[in-house]
Length: 188
Image 1: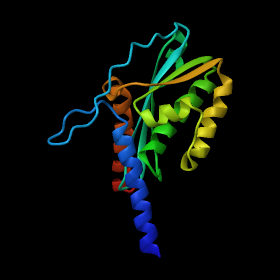
Image 2: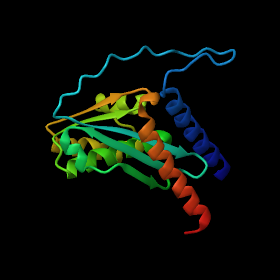
Image 3: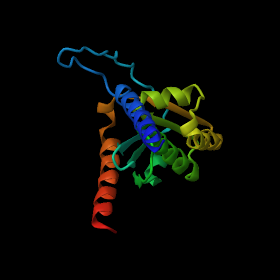
């Protein structure tokens, strides 16, 4: 029975890892298999009174650890907000890690009394889910927090961007993850 559950858990983790990977930046031709190319999105017109936050997560399937990164910019009130660079243990999927990064950004902005927020993420699956007000069982609590925190804003929106346009947040997330791995190995 234990082997079956272990195998089932591994299959679920692999499914969500593939889903996350497929939702990332535009794919190119790879050897003999061709995968879809995504058309460029039109430039996003951001109102001057809106704070933007690029968010990303880095997830390690072997340890189930993740790093979260976020960079606020835009409106002058964004200058009071810190760069987000945190790590979390026991995260079950890359999609959950991405959702945790969005929740961290939304809650940070809400506590700073930001009124208009635009979240920019390279996770197409998560952005689609948030824009359609959906959830998944494994993400219910995290997504609930995101939706509930949305009431603190006059306007909050989520937008997908290519991975290449999210490199700073990606670097912060990878830095947070690597510091957690170093700490874990060092025994502190």
